[in-house]
Image (cartoon, rainbow, N blue to C red):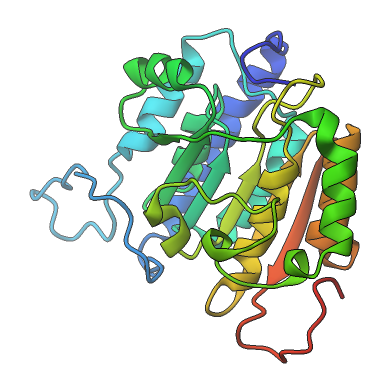
Amino acid sequence: MSMRSRPPLSINLKLILLLFLFLSFLLLLIRSGFQSPHNIPPQTQVEPECPSSFPTTPICTKTPPALANALIHYATTNITPQQTFNEISVSATVLETKSPCNFLVFGLGHDSLMWTALNHGGRTVFLEEDKAWIQQIQERMPNLEAYHVQYDTKVYEADELMKMGMEEEECKSVGDPRFSKCKLALKGFPREIYEIEWDLIMVDAPTGYFKEAPGRMSAIYTAGLMGRNRGEGETDVFVHDVDRVVEDNFSMAFLCEGYLRKQEGRIRHFTIPTHTTTSPTLPFCP
């Protein structure tokens, strides 16, 4: 269901989320002295300087702006993220290990400040189908990095697209989505989206709960293609709303059941290894 149409969750979840963000902040402070950023630099951010009057203090305890904004936002609103605490914890556990990193999120919503805060020091980018919604969110959260994208699929085309993806050889080819001949590959993103190696990808959009909606068929396929096309390492891909037919079938088909690491509630976690530095005979799915 769309992030914009779901009813707020209970106040208990809100309080749990605030506690979760605060504990995450403490963990960030503990490891800030020995963890370095990844090879792709995040957008330039101006962080507050530590007080110079205490030269013996080993680390700065100033609250990072991303976390401060998130705490203020969730403390002053009755709207909470659409994922449950247990579902959020699946992605947060991976972020705890990999952040600061490059995190791509399909969908912009009330949970966006949370993801940005949990990836403090990294780069978190949101792809959103609704231009007016981007403007509305960024008026209140101007530091979020979001881009408008368009989708040319419909949920009612899912069966046809599944057949095409499973039968056509071009859909099993690994490479840059911009140059793929597979109809499922998304080619209209800003150039930078294709050039960054994403460490985490969250598919929680576009809208997919009615037949005329764009559906997440192409988003799921392209997320898997980006993971396979990276130079080295692996990409953690999360798909939300797997209780729905499209998210269930397409995640298993194109992110592969063999790459599935965990399912909690309506979210699945896949780990996609690079295919560019492994054997050329490596199958699309193990």
